[in-house]
Amino acid sequence: MLKAVLFDMDGVIVNTEPLHHKAYYQMFNQVNIHVPDAYYRAHTGSSTINICRQIKQDFNLPHTPETLVQLKRDSFKELFKNDPSLQLIEGVLDLIKDYYHNGLKLVLASSAHMNTINSVFDRFELAPYFDAKFSGADLKASKPHPEIFIKAAASTGFNKQNCMVIEDSTNGIKAAKSAGIFCVGYDSKNSKAQDYSLADKVIDDFSSIHYHKIVTLHKQGF
Image 1 (cartoon, rainbow, N blue to C red):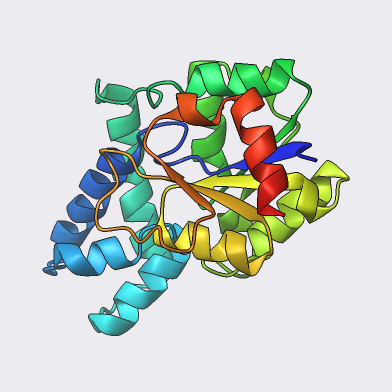
Image 2: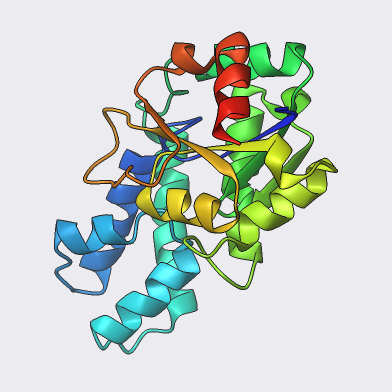
């Protein structure tokens, strides 16, 4: 029986991806490298530090990964404060409230830095609905490694067969399935070139997985 839902954040709860994209490309310009969009998309869902480590290696940069991370974060902070496009994903607040009021335990499991997670939770007043928050930036391994979902599921106190993940990225879906957790792939208009083939169910509208619809499907999935 479904008892807990593990939410990704970027692209699922809030559309920060355009801001991240702008911030990364501002950082790329600052260090004078040209990064193809396909390269950027391939790393969607990984933590900032792991992306910056890969960029340093692939583009032979003299900067430390930590310096690249800070440049990107400085840009993101400015965009977060001033970019009016930052909004909750359509329908997600209703979904969160629906799950919460039906007794499901909600946990956030995001690759974003905890400072970013807290900023989003403060801005949109999400804290009352969630039992715990996990940041991939605090873990040794990044998605598609399953570590974050293993830890998030364990924090609920339930067996992973009683959990469900909602993800929008290839790497996030791989991480959820590697953790052995039922996964809903959210194919939104903001998701670019992501692979949903491993997801147990693919949706493009959160109303299709409201509580009374998803509990039966989740039970069938296991």
